[in-house]
Image (cartoon, rainbow, N blue to C red; front, side, top):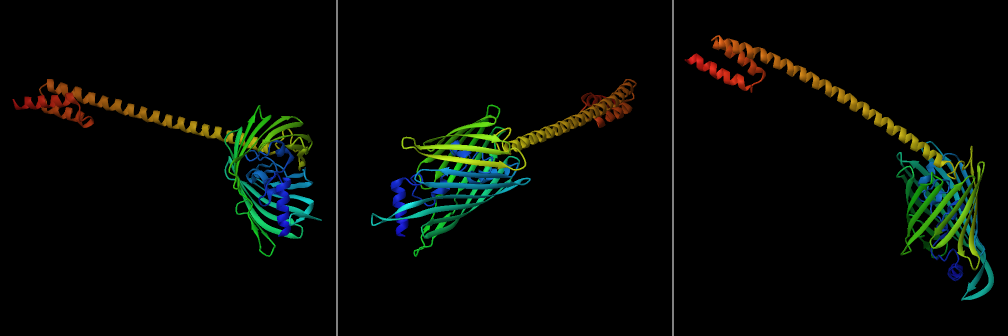
Length: 404
């Protein structure tokens, strides 16, 4: 426990892990040089294998198997490494990834005094990701995380859970919703069995395609449980094949980066400006590979954009078929209604002809003084039209004549 307290003091004083004193800060340090160059905003896009970290729902958008290797060059001799593999199926995908960080040669402090000794600290997070398409425009996904933290000869283990949704609002706009570190906890193997709970994160993301899909505009808003304010991440990605330029904003820190596509291989570099005067900045380098085809040509979507475009075209084709079907149904119903109308008109015309025949015959009988026969003919008219006014009046006249 003494060494745990020493680490906390050093973290606070030395701004270790971006000034965070909560449990397992590596969970919120970010990964993927591509994403870090865009300010860490990725919840709404999540279109490559790093979706397993930012929004697991996006993993089912993969078109090919993908492998990603990343290393981070950080200040204070910290290390950050990431390995991820994504395997897509027809409507789903699974992913395996590992995030590792650490720092060595930490001075040992006892009673506020350096002892001359040192020790190391390391964290490891293993991700098992599953993602599936819930509907034509909605994907869901989740992570099961295994956590391991070690400080010298003291260690902790635990588990965590993430859940994400990605929805396509239109052909250019997609949104994401993520809850990270649900019920996540670490238990130390000390005598007191200390338990730590990393803060949970609720995140909303927006992605918009502009300039004929050459430009991505991204925005993430995050609420971290141990912070009062919202964390804002925003980024841009502009594609000039085979080069991709990026810039972003990561919670008050400027970021930049670029990517280069070489066949199925993508090289990405990201830079986060933490302290430019002291040259304490974060550098990220990633190598991403798409098996079985070009990884990012003709774009840096790593295949998923092409898949989404196919799905959009498929949805558009389906919509047109449904419209054509509805139009055929409308024409069929209109034709049926027209035939029914024509049938009714013919029946009405025939009815009027019969009525006219009986009426005229009744008039002739009346003029000939044959009032009973006239009444019978007018009554036949009334059988067809009970409200025929002239027939009613003439029957009354004929009855009056019979009584004279």
